[in-house]
Length: 90
Image (cartoon, rainbow, N blue to C red; front, side, top):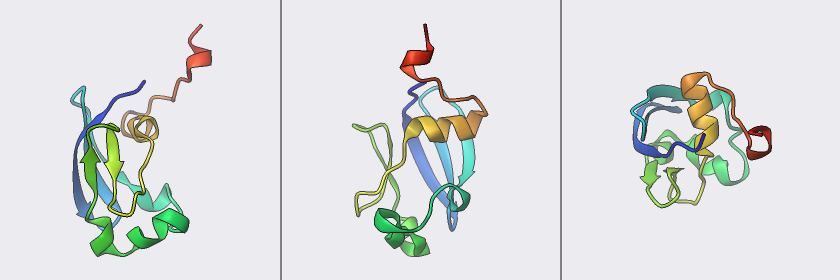
């Protein structure tokens, strides 16, 4: 799949509007996707959560503390398409 995220905008605590390189846009509620422990603990604070940005080199969203999310998982949530792994493409 591998679609890069090109734009992110926080809407409400834990909800992000994402735009992918192919034009797909979706609002994703991360509160049901991640546990706010470990590297994700700081972003439980809404003011820290709002510091999300796109890392163009990685093609995904990141936070200042180094937390990031797999863009394939986010694209799957945005489109409803399953993630296809390389070994499944034969």
